[in-house]
Image (tube, rainbow, N blue to C red; front, side):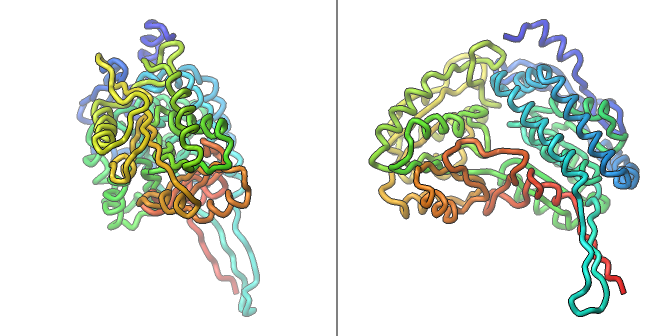
Length: 487
């Protein structure tokens, strides 16, 4: 368990000012806002509340620093990213504890996020030196075609509260590798992790002005003027589809390059030939990773009618072993939800399903006392009209429904406006590939419950967004293509 003294020492060292032009400073208004511990509902610390004036100063700094950063040799940018990777890994304990304090997840999960998030810096340090164009003769023999890549320019990244480190490094890594500059607006619920990351980036050698971090309690007041400034050239956002749609509208007048990683409603499809024990083990990862507060979390469990009883019994037995409590305590495997609002939403979805005929096999009721806790929950016999099958749960709740054949499974899996990720469990390779091709999602996990990998292109289709993060594709989001016709 993290001691009170260790927690206090860390909070005393964490930067709390906005980070602009290589320095931490107060907000231009002098205002601050509180960051709460979701396990206790107590205030952890106050941070500077960035204003539109601060946003303008950050964009000024990004524009000024842009040409030199773009001209910095790719190898030098790569070495800076590699140094940031090493600096982040060296401070794993600090970052893990800080994430647990402000977001709630159990310490082992926070440590896993540090390792995962750091990998984006290492991966894109290697991609920085592989930015390439082409030089070919024109087919008509009229000259030569020269194609080159250039950084997109100043970017705005709006990051979510559920993965306060990794969703930032997944954007910062490719942007810095490409030679672009970036303003980061972290979620108001979890700004501390990104502020500490700014310190690591500065120590790694990122030049002043290339990265700014702007925590704020008034997002639209900060971002609105930035969208109206023609110098901003790209928006990248991870968050809900509802907010994403509004941001797309707001970015349209400036014709910004946009990449959107939005909500999900992931189906977890278990066929009759699946290894049930393995499927259950992977279901725990797909459902309970990050306490279920993940856009990739399995949201609907579609299980073949011949194995649904066995799968449900084993999932209940496995989920009831999880220990609910404050993430800083030893032995805790699932922490609180992020807020009282989120706790209420999850409770409403469970109550709606039960009222419509679902059977509560495990959990389902928030415990008394402080903190935004909700226990691991399993719902069987979930009716088709239950809201939980159409709305993103973002909590540790597993609704299970049967299917009888492959066509029915695929139809049910695709019956959503979302299309981020799907999970398929079968021992039949032909079926795995056939079903994967029919699923309307940007990613498919076959016999695995975690698909995120810095080397893979992460992203969705339909209402889950557009653009890709990670993989060799990720850096293209921050590069413009230039064509030169040579005589």
